[in-house]
Image (cartoon, rainbow, N blue to C red):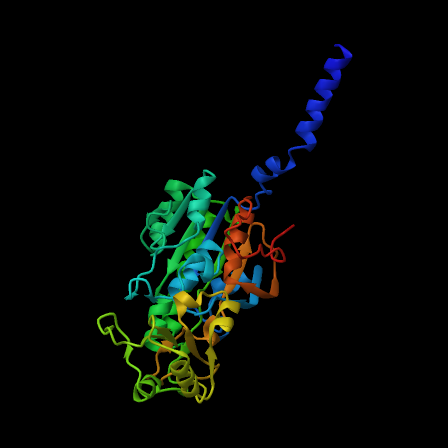
Length: 393
């Protein structure tokens, strides 16, 4: 080989090794820590339930894994917004899903059933890497690259046997349904059934000899408190009306002269219709709201600091402080307030440390941690971080 050819070849080798590190890193994967990840979402599961009720299978997962004592969901602590953040690793100001319902200022309409998620979900990310996701009755994942099954342990078994998924998302809604009906202090029957179902899932993993290859994450979207707590603003909307403001609480009630659209979902979300509220009227509204005891009045700066989008969530939010509700109920459960942002989060199994209680974690940290366990990089669309303190290095 001539000297010139040798130099050219050596230059090419150095170029491939040193000049393209970002290309190689972009496609690099982490070490895969789990063959399967099972995400069990217990809707409305108050973290206090772990101490209030005897739940042996959940307790076993916590004892043999990592329990986060200060896990926190996003505000408002309502189902659709929090599930979206669990499934995307992103906050509402990025996902486009601010609450269970919202007032759309452009169309001048109130909407529920929000599904227009603006960032990729876990199943879509896994699909792009050739991985398989099964979802069991998750209302947000229709058409998002997941194989769908109905709720229940029998369907869990069928899905695992048929598809051998990398990720299975198991949604339990009865914890929320019964929590609303009965309140958090009358949940024994429901929670024993849920815990038994989790035991059957664990038994399946043992039967198939894949327990040690499977990471299990148990998460709730929000907590639950009794609605019979002291009320802070039972006639707030009426007081605003008495001050001369026209308020609509339903889509049909929105008229040309409507000043404010109000959504009550634990907290009170007030939207000012275009051109209806000037500085004088705004000051009048604030003078009324600021007289409310035991509540925080959240405006644009506070809401943005909570990673919400005030344009989508509301110009002003009235949020009861811990121990209080907007309006006293008859003893059922409720959420949507800062107090119920405290959530349940347990990690256990493959790739997870054993027998630890750790401190803070956020709802948006669940998705990036799942990707890490499956050996995938965390995309820029996610706000959360891998819970490295819970994961075996």
